Image 1 (spheres, one colour):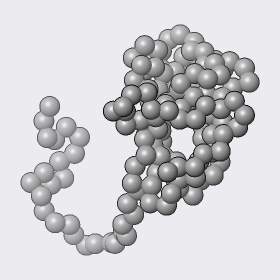
Image 2 (tube, one colour; image 1 turned 120 degrees about the vertical axis):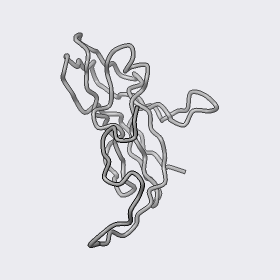
Image 3 (tube, helix red, strand yellow; image 1 turned 45 degrees about the vertical axis):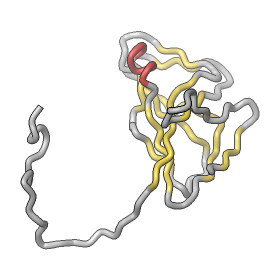
Image 4 (cartoon, helix red, strand yellow; image 1 turned 90 degrees about the vertical axis):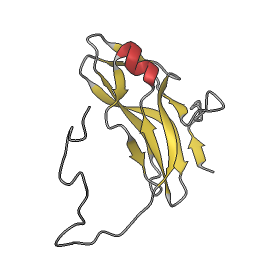
Length: 142
């Protein structure tokens, strides 16, 4: 369970279908906010989370906003760490050529809860060989 403190009027995250992996989160704004073409802003949600240790909450774009308006989460997926207690804000960017207006209560992103495994890092002189090796971007084909 994720405990959430919500400012007055803030909408709690909600799953919109029985199979949804992501829960929609909404803007909490005193007045509409305009994202001009190419502009990005941190949009407040009025939500504060207590995420259990060993988990993270990933902030992801809503596909409808991306397809219809060219608006997406700039640092997708964003990560909310288990020790963060500040307000959840979503960094949105407008990739379109038109202004995009965000109003109070608009669904602006979705969040997905994921386990966050922490492994130690150890310096090594060499690494094990694989078939792919050092093949990088595009090396496995189309």
